[in-house]
Image: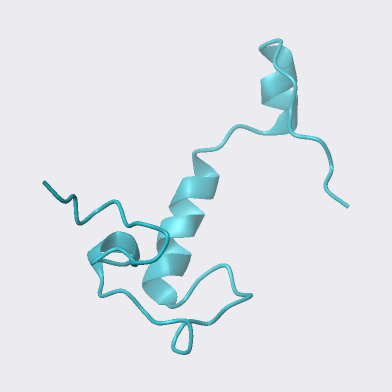
Length: 68
């Protein structure tokens, strides 16, 4: 049985992000965090639900290191 939602390295997934049609490399806006307004809204919602470094440290967790 082939799972269309889990692509092999040689074959892209049938669906793109948020259930939209998959974009080819040539069509995608590579280097951008979002492809369109719908992606921007989804990313904003994802980021709002993330805890800040201060909140993580209060819970005794170690936040991600600064990436250079």
